[in-house]
Length: 265
Ligand SMILES: [Zn+2]
Image 1 (cartoon, helix red, strand yellow):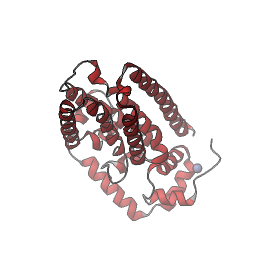
Image 2 (tube, rainbow, N blue to C red):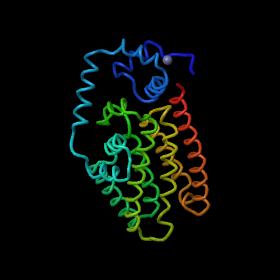
Image 3 (cartoon, protein in one colour):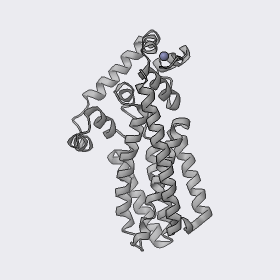
Image 4 (cartoon, protein in one colour):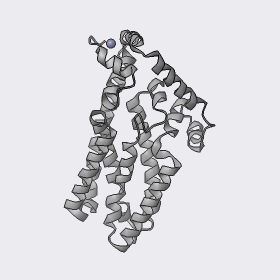
């Protein structure tokens, strides 16, 4: 049981759609656990904004027959609202995946002509782009739906990023076949791409997805520039694996905390 409650200003901001990122997630977690704040929320709701919200939500619910991604998820027995929220992930759209595939093809070509490290260094940055656009107003057509659906925003972010990393991994694996050295060394991008994604997810609740992804991307670029090939030797890869394991453990703990907040009632 929590003995603190949301400020009027937070409820007002939430009702008016003026909150985003971490403040939004924290207000939402509390609302999920606290009936008294949910009751107070009603008095802050601007009837016009509520109508607009529902109208937009209606439109997205009535929208189109499920696409191939959504049908696949339903086949895998993912609950239908989760499937729709996942399928609407900006970084899983066909146009996005085509852009990623073209970027990879270009990078692989440069790597063939110049140095394979170009590919190993650039490929891990692509899932970060996906993380950056994976959640938020203005980018995500189902943002309103995500707020009212019975699923935590943070959990949704994790689910979406898992889907984005899987799609990117498949594309990178294909592209790395074009590298001059198609041996095990050509897979050196895999562990770094996991590490960067998990790190960005760890930072996202505090700084927002865009800032988190940019920070991690800049850090990675500096690291590659400083250490050059050392990251892609056996020792470098072992170090990266260790970093992935540590960061994933932290992330699991954070996800559990979000869940507990929700179950507090
Ligand atoms: Zn409360």
